[in-house]
Length: 412
Image (cartoon, rainbow, N blue to C red; front, side, top):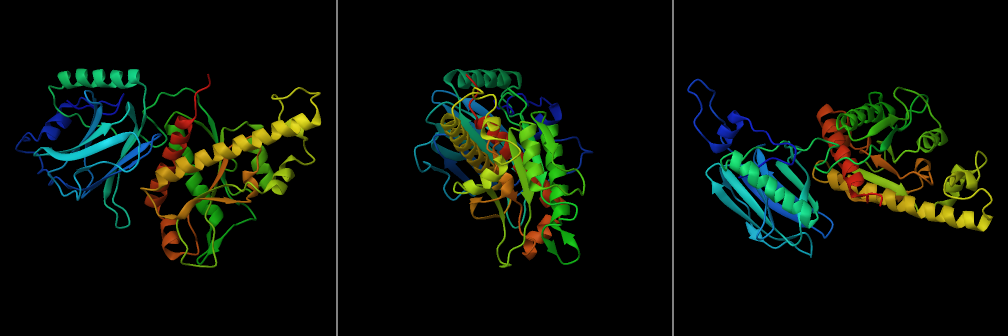
């Protein structure tokens, strides 16, 4: 009846037996108790919906598309549910028009999403419990064409028949991956801030920002490369000092599709904590002009977009249009990254911010700066030094990058 995410079906007999709750061989170890589903909530807009299921412990899940009416159903392997509101209508006018939670079988809790339009799962994954938060299943849903939805429904019917109507566990979408097909391999340039003689922020015990962000950047690079969706480069791979303009130049020279600068600063108020994502301040034109000065002129910046003898006033107009487009794309990237960070780690209030960071001034490369947290806050600093926190955050950031590129319109 149910299948895994598209392209991730696992027709493993032992897994099916476990999902059906069949008795195991006598010599097998006892099966741990199935968890309780604690809460189900949905955020919903016309462009994107997100389902979050809070779990007492990590467990398996399965997904299926259904028609007449159009629905998405999500099973989790669980014995009970204590959802405060097991049915309802999400606020707003989005992809999901209604939802209901039910005990579909002694070992399965099912959430059914009634769709207002054809939709498909973009990615789905389970988060470990962390910082007092329960385990979570996160399912991101985006619009689909009627043809795509019909194809998914038919694929699920075939899978149901071959599996004798048994749920088949889904494989979580890998970080940096997506259920959508890969059209191109964009170049992502990751910029670990500081380096060499520039240590960045420092904390007691010789803890330096430059070391933390390099370690994190290497983890993020590994995840993106493993997804096989991106080409990835780092502005520095060791303790090397680079001027700010060199970092920007590396991204521009290599025609990066996204530039991400990684930082972990200090602040005079130690209670301030949490991750945030910065884009360029729209009023920082004086800083932007520094990027364009001396080494190149405006015509060089728009090379390939303008004729060599174009009038100066036309060049100015095209350059302004390019700046506007990069600001828009940078905001889209920041929003996608924050959307994936949100269920995973602590965020600052208003996590999408603007500032005059020099590394965000490239007029032809979408650019964001990610503040992982603050060395001046004890909780943030402890997290920044933890490998599992770095893994969790890099995983979320990789998902955000993938979400951003999925959201770009394919060239016509």
